[in-house]
Image (cartoon, rainbow, N blue to C red; front, side, top):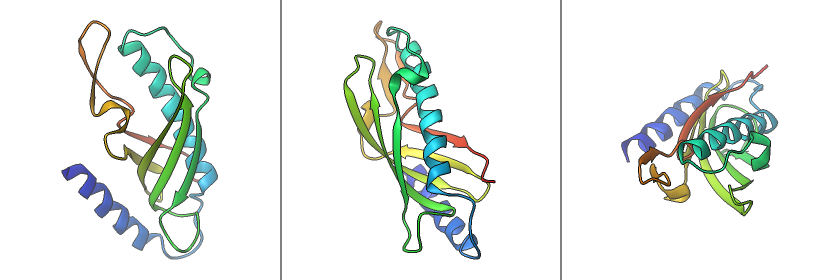
Length: 143
């Protein structure tokens, strides 16, 4: 997929740029940001799929993120996040995302493989719905 190549290329460029000095982009900030964004998107997705409404806190999202670099878990570049969460029927789910994080605290998250049902899902009535959790973007305050 072309967008995956673009994400990897952008992340490599960002890694080179951020190699100097310490970074305020930390695993704690990345984890908190992706947990919040994922839970809010999951809430919207459930609505679009015409399932029983849920609040973001109902998904109990927990992220564990690490940077793909030998020099620690801080800085812009490529990250991997494993997300544990509860689905609409309260079943425990686990998914992995490749992240491209920029020095300003913005990121693009892409599901690894064909997790989460792919880029398009079907609502209860058969209507095609874009899978909001398959590829998404977010930002956090890196300061």
